[in-house]
Image (cartoon, rainbow, N blue to C red; front, side, top):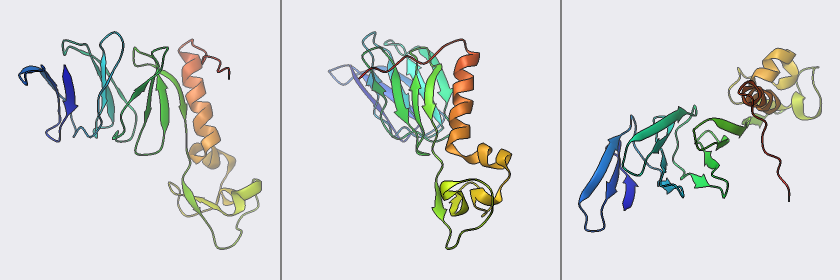
Length: 173
């Protein structure tokens, strides 16, 4: 079977002779190439902010919102973990059922021309987060900084995993 997505917001599955096997609509353009798991599950991202999973026969299994458009192709690990990066530079590891295994948050921003603020440490006095209001981290309260910063995002992602009763798998190299 040949799988591909299209700008018409649809993922297609064609037989080798070019006839349609199945098609499923998404809510956004599909720029991502599908990835196929060993059990035949088809994973594909969309610009509608969702990663989709379809059974080999085209039956929808699940979709999960990731907060940013998905243009990169999913990658499937040997243990079935689905890895995907969004256009917002967030890397996710999802279990085959669509639940989040872990996520890595990124805080994008710029460097101020001069140091500003008295809170924090390191680069806080010169780092201006893109999602903020123009202040450096050192000018923000600790709660404001944690809402935007990579550490706060990572801890919120970890808390979500722990609420689901799962611990991330240990990585051994």
